[in-house]
Image (cartoon, rainbow, N blue to C red; front, side, top):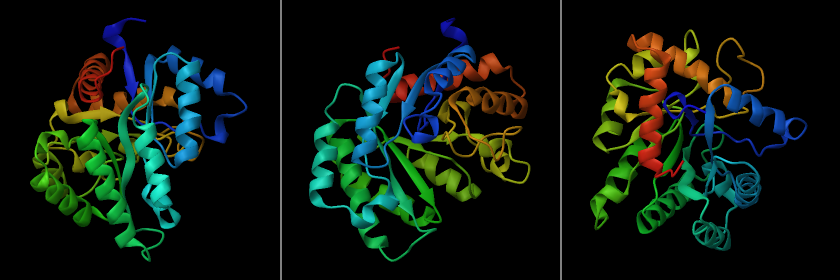
Length: 265
């Protein structure tokens, strides 16, 4: 594969059972589309083990360790201790996806915030980037990251990606001021999704691409199962919006991901 034409999907759940029947074909289609690297975010402890299994079977697959905010409702200290242990595995390149989700259930917001802070401190301790999930919680998420940076001995170690980015111009400014990148996926292609307006002031060197497969497939596959190969459609849309070629977007965003996650490939 031509290094200069390589795409990186920085957020794909390729280990989920929706891929059980054709996972090898999904991986081949990704490679054929120029996607040589996939980063697999965690949902829970079991998902980290599933992702590590894929990383050991397929070249160019890297893994994250974390408890998804929705999973923290029933999480225990021992669960987080396992996250800490797994974060030392050589395939782990980030702490994620952590964050806040107030959309489905607000009954355990404080517990989500506690686990978010634990993840942030773990990332700073291990010098690993964070990958944040955010749904209906932008103000609290930004405030907590800002507070943790202020408390940290080295704030630059609290860095990473706000995944599935979208929101207000102020939110974009906040993310940039925190020193984070934004992750752009299929929602960039949605007609009324508002993401193009949200990223108008985001410089290219702060953008990485993702699919969030099997969720949020880009147009023209919206409503169907997403897969890593479709990150090329996200690159095409970003190229259209920025007046660039797809190769220019691929090169820039892949370089961003390679630096942020310290990828050797």
